[in-house]
Amino acid sequence: MDFFQLSAGKWRSQRATHHLPFKRSETGESDIQVETLDANHPEIIELCQYHQIDPSLSVGGSRVRWLGTMAWDRENEENHQGKTIFAIVPDGDNPRAGKLLRERGYAEIMPVVGLFHMDDEDGLVLTTEYETMSSIERFWFASPNMRMRTSTVKRFGGFSTASFCTETRIETSVEVSSTEEVTEIGSDVLEKRQFYSVLGW
Image 1: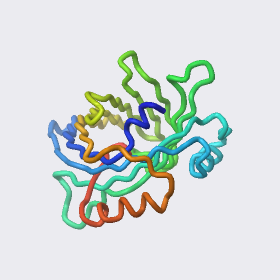
Image 2 (image 1 turned 120 degrees about the horizontal axis):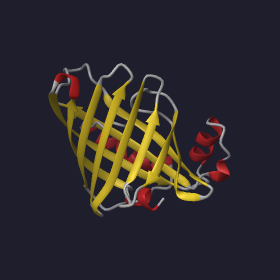
Image 3 (image 1 turned 135 degrees about the vertical axis):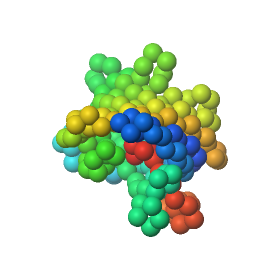
Image 4 (image 1 turned 45 degrees about the vertical axis):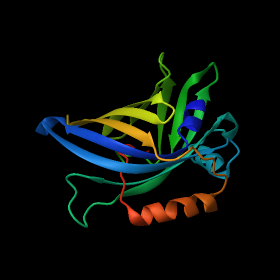
């Protein structure tokens, strides 16, 4: 949860995505808003119940909103906007690893359960298996206000992408306790810009 709490706030993300089969790269940018949720938050409890996991096993999670653009977008045909909830369920014998419950995935837009672990350098590694593809993401902090991210998506047919993101905090981290506050904070941003987060945050 320390890692997720450090991620709370608003971020500007610059991304390069490599489409490996086509040997081409695409750039993009996004603004991402992350809010920390306590273990007893109704949305965390609901998400655990949906995945048939005892809510008392969760230590909390995050609500994430994003809106963005990519270089290959066609006018009025792309919609890189969304939100999702994460719930962290650590292993009983190792709190640095466990399950990460998602309200929606990226590679397939559906609720999904992935695995997380903190590596030896305190980077957060997420592994998610979908019906038709798999993804691996790694997040780490270069400083409290700069987060780095790599991700790979591999389709079972062989199509793959690899991305690298540099994410910079655009204001001081804030804790928001209610949905109404999040909506108020995010509404002006969501109306003025289009953002994108490759794998959901």
